[in-house]
Image (cartoon, rainbow, N blue to C red):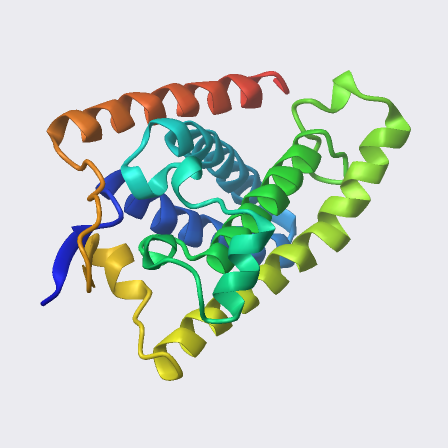
Length: 221
């Protein structure tokens, strides 16, 4: 007998797929350069809003979207790699998957942060550049255009590879729950709250985060 668990609430799923679209757009516009930098900046502000939302939702979101319910210690990671550990640690992000989530969020925060203070001396100056020294702005620009973008591309490739590995080797479809929200599980587990109230709260949180991103963007005007 299996149990249908609402693992990913709608706000978390929308965050995930919107972030995917924005990251793809950022890589493409960043490589094109020139006039595309305008859209690169806009997508960057969108990612800023999404990241702020995810940080808040990591404390206020559905059960399995909360950091406290998927971030595990080293012992849990080692146990998972050995094929042990409680099933409850695998309902949402498994211990290794949780590390990839943290890594992606950290790298994206660094990329957005360096973009906000960057100055390529050609077509774009970040809205926060005037608040940092010239040397720091140039260092941020160098990181943003070189190390940062390749870290993101590398993590995306690893993420896709992991999804394919779980699908082909472990017969576990990680994409379907991120589309439908539900996962079939062999034992009872709590479901994430995903009702109208939760979605309304998420919409308000996202609106506030978007407002913060717009306010940051206007600092460059």
